[in-house]
Length: 362
Image (cartoon, rainbow, N blue to C red; front, side, top):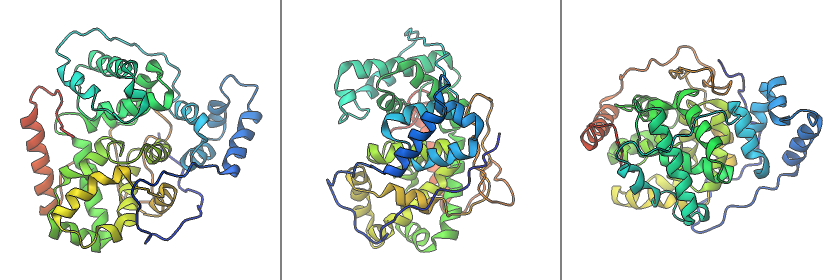
């Protein structure tokens, strides 16, 4: 299935040179035009059991556009479910058939500052989702990073275990996201490769700066891609990023990474490696104008990014169809710089767990 959603409506953006501020709460989005637009959709399709899904089936392009621009918070979960045609018809199997130590140790480390996971019940829900994933897909197993994806889904769904599990499953199989967690992390490698290629072409000053800095991909970009940015940014930013990913596909993460680097350009340039190692973890607490980032992300014209999708169960926007000439083949072929860092990533992963359990330490 292809994606025909190709643009994000122009948003009122501020100067990209604005410095980030610590501890500044993200402004609550009250875009009345968006709210009115979604209210009209709900009213126009009110005769249907699921108005948003009916809207998507009738006009998928418009649905993608609306989703990428961000639905109101109270409709976000309904919009995400519609994107995946998720109806809760999945098997939850929380039987502890094997050692769950890797899952157990990640429960308390998953968004500990979020009130949802401060409650032991939230961690119980998270464990149920992750154990079910292992039981239903033992060939994939558990990989650290899955907990972040499941955590966001549980927060947005307000603790709906069945629906959260279904969407996690469809991210992995319907969108091809299992390549983020399979042995060898093929999708992570391919995304990093394409990011560095695109960075050298679109923002060469930053590309050169990173080369000179010798910043290991394991310290930032692999985490961005493997967790769909959920580990490294504020929750309010993450849900907006996921709106765009679910509209455009996992390949759009390269665009988003370019948009973020472009936004952060003046905060990055000139930093020493030590300064950078302090700066990157602080992104989670910084104010980022994510609407502006997503707007600029949509402007990067990149080659088509082909992702192996084994199931028809995912959203109709499974693949990123940015204007391009030829697809990227999922095999390693990068500069020595990218090869060096991705190889170290692969060695780290394989050494950390040959059993395919908890393969990546965030």
